[in-house]
Length: 215
Image 1: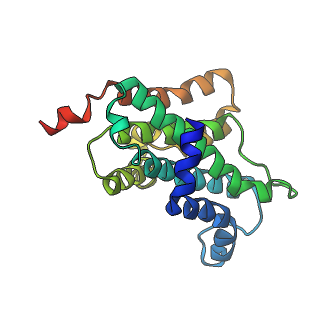
Image 2 (image 1 turned 30 degrees about the horizontal axis):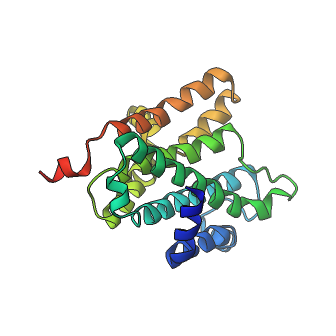
Image 3 (image 1 turned 90 degrees about the horizontal axis):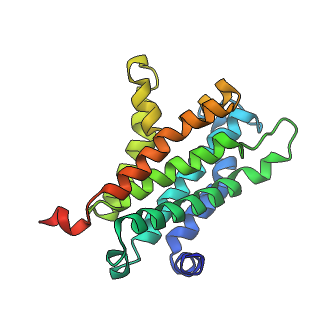
């Protein structure tokens, strides 16, 4: 898988652009801070968590781009193998993009890279959503929009409504960072955080083949 992933990444200019965007997230956010997009221009814990979340999202988009290039080989795989391949590619690229985004700031005083259990679960959640959407018979653009809606925009819209917090927890990868901070990353809290990730992985594996949707 690693050889195929490296080969397809090199061949896809959009994948390079997404990686470059992940690297530039820090400077872009810092420049935007005067108009309130970020709380401060320093590499605080909250600042780096935002960078981690957004760059892991870019890695998931890159995974959708690369998985779409699998062609007929994809259809030869079984449901579990498809979910595993898409999720594995998304996890690798999500972790890579997130590391590229926060690495230049982790050394600063007060800068704490969220490469903790919560940060890893953010990447895993994006990967599980990617695996689910990759198994749907949608065009690439629709899957990218679906990933953005499910993992980012809908949870952001539900953030202020306490009645929808459970749905936000199931959908939104960013929720792992909040819960991990609240429970201090205790074993019970970490176990609870894995529930939505596992649920999306199981749902991806249980989806019927794309050919069944087209009938």
